Length: 434
Image 1 (cartoon, one colour):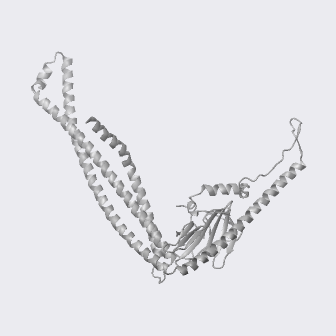
Image 2: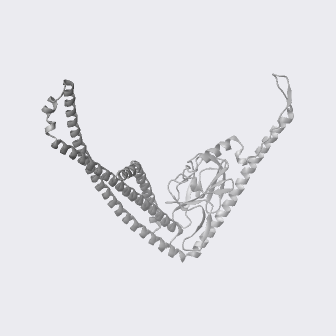
Image 3: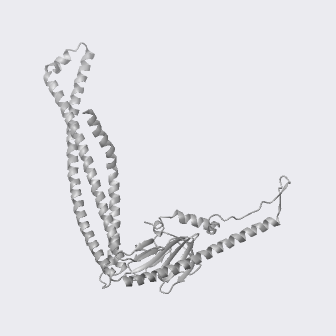
């Protein structure tokens, strides 16, 4: 029995800590759910604009996939809430059980004391008990004892009543938790129904896109050519910037070497001794774009802001992620060198994600790209309908550099955003603010 009580106490103590963290977890869940709802509302608004089109598009499919992803995340948050409620109910049941056992023990102890007092009531007659004292001090001690015993009995009664009230309060809380669980279950069923509708709608779009595979192949070929041309242009720009930095480093090294040759001997005024000046060299360590003080500072600040960079648009979502991808329902594949960001409409501001210098404005026919250098980091913003900066301009984080262009399939606005460390493309999503 003792082991059982110890086990119950140990379990209750170890899991009670989890209960203390639950309000914070619930608040976090609420924030997450609100953010998902806001995103869903935004995507739905964009989707409603193209839903009535006779011809299905990749933009429509991407929006449906995004909606499904958000809906699954929303249901996942409900599932986490249900688990928290179940854990809460379980822990509360443990506490009620512990309190009930404690109450049973208190009642048993109180009953024994009452029975004992009843059986020995003649021996506890106040007058006889006090007057049978052998001295005055003994009588005082007996009076004090009787008062303490009466206080003890009253305390027993109060403890029993308080424990009963606490059990009643916990049981009432359990009813509230069960109501919360029922509401969460109803919400779960509702959201799963919505998810089923979205999946069926997506399957219908995929089925329709299969019949348009030739048109999609043409669209994809145009995108591949544009990505290739832009990548080649950016590579040339990066190569040019590296060459400029290398030439500057070379000039600096030659100037320092010349100074060394002109002053081969250095005299120490304090001692009067002379020595040959040490040769000064500029060594390339890692990158030519990480040699001068301004680039070193910029590179460090850019790296420190990984995961914190602002989005290049105010409203939008990643419709095509970085890297290889397949168009669902077809055999068409591509490799995205950056991320494709869909926006509700064209014409919105496109902003620089970090301080830097505009090193090129590339016009590729049906759109414009702005390339900004941030030390050894380069960002490219393409499919712009217009630009508001010029080559050589110094830009600040969040500064508007152009306007969002139309998506190729007419599904709204679109910006293709790339991030490179010199010539190497990296996933921009890991750098942008979540």
